[in-house]
Image 1 (cartoon, rainbow, N blue to C red):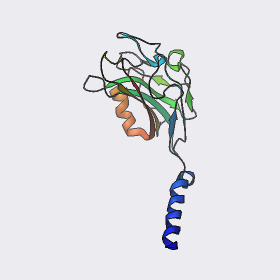
Image 2: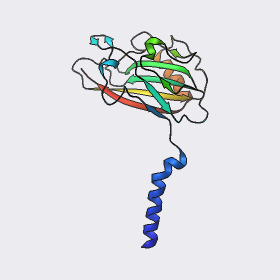
Image 3: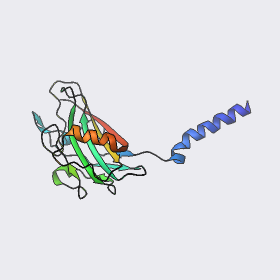
Image 4: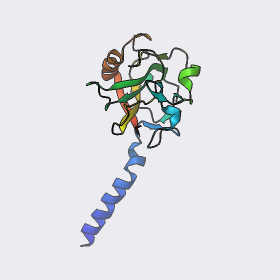
Length: 182
């Protein structure tokens, strides 16, 4: 019985301290993106009257081999058959650990960062704006740690093309899911 109890204690300790032993993975955090989106992150147009302010984001524990980052915001619940891309940012320098609130409008990014076209038809942040009366939509904001310095695309690149490149170059990613309906 002592042998079994000792083994159980060892297993519990290993489980509890494995994060300290093996390190944590890439982690995305935001003071602006907690549970439900606020009016700050709601689009101003298409019938919505939000402030369209891009959220503050910060990340830590980038994996070894990270050469740059990308950020995407995607709504898989949009009634389009293919979802809706709200924000696509890439070629963020590997030394960057955060994006300030409203960086999209003020262009407060590291040199060389590109905001490409969203499904709104222009570059930059486009906030939440689900159809009136729909169920709450999920908005998935993701930071991608990439194995290349540059994706080799410009600001006219479609979200699908950026997504294609991200799928080949993402080492690790972390997401925050928020919800909104009207």
